[in-house]
Length: 189
Image 1 (cartoon, one colour):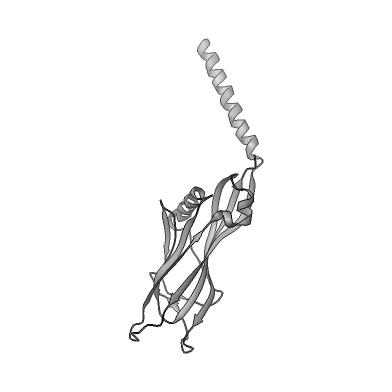
Image 2 (tube, rainbow, N blue to C red):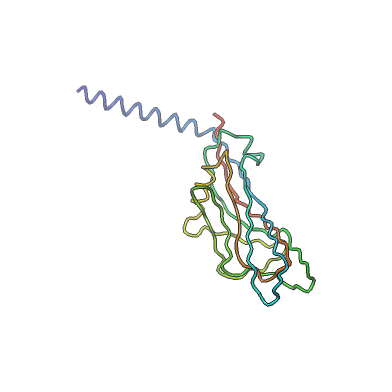
């Protein structure tokens, strides 16, 4: 009979703690925001005119607390959920006016990383780089979960976004914004 009393007490205690968490969660605040960084890609004019492929690399740090909505709830954020990841061409500047189009060749990849994880997307086809075009980085193989892990580990820190690949032209300067659309959950209690 004493064991039955202990079991009932344990069940009541567990139910009480569970309901406290449910009550606390009603105060959760969800904020939709975008964490983004601009990738400046400078592909210098090549001395060798015979080459059609020009390697490039660019990366930048993102500090989540620099985003006003996130900074407002600093210390109270409980979760980041990734809703989408986009690469948007902000500008393309050409040294040579004879350049008609600039192409990122198949195999070029975008990445998001911290000290523990790296999520990357490899382009399986060529991408023409034109002002205003957007490339959606799909959630292939649950890669958004890796990005969520990176964000949740670095709420108060920083992480890196970048691009590496091959371009069809030299003498171009390209700016691409890599943006992570997120729903941030915070609990002010």
